[in-house]
Image (cartoon, rainbow, N blue to C red; front, side, top):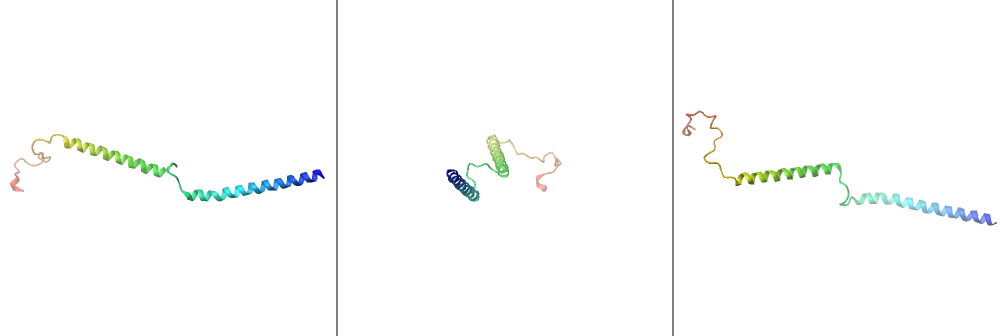
Length: 100
């Protein structure tokens, strides 16, 4: 009789283990979509497209910063003496301003 009771308690314990294990697996499977809907937090990795956009934005900011520094440097330089005429070598020498 002792063996029969022992077998029944083992079977009951095994059923209880299977039930608890199945409940845990079911809860884990149901929690997956909820976590996915929550969205990403700030610490997560960025997608390759987001990384590309960030690199392009940083490059554009660097170009603008360099351009602005160059423009400030050129404005601070002394102005050129006299009137600058880039077409002076192209016009004929006898052309006067009154003919225009």
